[in-house]
Structure formats: structure tokens, C-alpha cells
Length: 212
Image (cartoon, rainbow, N blue to C red; front, side):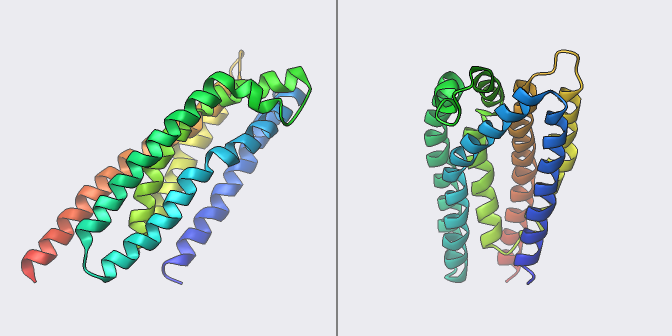
């Protein structure tokens, strides 16, 4: 309960922010709303790699923490970041430059394809940076630090992604590219927060070892 409850709460509140995001986009018109819907389908495929890394990372790290092999846990986190970023770079290229082709698999309406591609150009960088963030999250979850993972996830959503999406949606020349860019911007914010916490957490562990 201590580990799982914060993750469940984070998932619930994060999904609520996506409902608010849909409301922002619906005001931009039917084509934008439909294009965003198509973009979300592609987004779910893009995030499969970092999500898989996070889940496997949490299990791997937890096993090694239990075995007293902290150095191996850190190495796994760094390897996950590197591997995910390399795969993400390939996905970034495909999504950023050929997102219209991907969107055409889901709809034949040229206006919807154009709007989906518009969103994907802003979202594309997420395929790279999310692998770094999710590796951090898997590492922290493996250590049982799910409360921190929840806090940084909610901070991303409510302090960066949601406000930025709203601001982008009310601009006179509002486009889905700006709204899509809110996701990687929030993720970069999360990486900075996790890096700071990782440094603090590592120092605390080293201090405990020195005392014990």
C-alpha cells in the first residue's frame, strides 16, 4: 500500500489533467480535436519503449537493492537512459519528419492528418527525454520512493504541462505544435527535479553506509 497507493493516485490525477487538455483543444475546432485524437494514438505507441524500461527497471533495481548491489542498480538506470534515448532518437526522426504518414494510417481526412502532424512535431522530442525520466522513475520505484515519484509527476502535470497547454491554446495563432511541446517541456522539468533528488538520495545512502 505504501508503494502502490502514491502511484495509483498519480495515475488518477494525471489522467484528469489530460481531460482538461482535451477541453483546451476542443475549443480550437473539430479538425484540431480529431487531429489530437489521432496524435494520441501514435503517442501511445511512442511511449511503449520508455514505459517498458520503467517497469523492468523497477523490478531489476528492487532485486539488486535487496541483494545489496546498489552499484548495479545505478548502472542499470544509466544503461536504460542510454538505450532508451538511442531508440527514442530514431522514433523522434520518424515522428517529427514523417508524422503525417503515421497519421494517415488512422484517418484519410487530409485536414485531420495535417492537425495530427502539427501536434506530433511538438510532441516528438518526448520520445527521447521520456526514456531518461522513466529510467529515473523506475530506479526510484525500485527503492520504494514512490511518494517522490508521485510528487514530481504531479508537479510536471500541474505546474508545467497543463499551464503551458492552456497558454498555448489561447494564443491568437494557436497551433497544436505548441500544445504538443508542453509534454517534453514538462518531462525536462521532471528530469531536472529527479536529478537533484538523485544527488541528494545518493549522498544520504553514502552517509548511512559510512555510519554503519
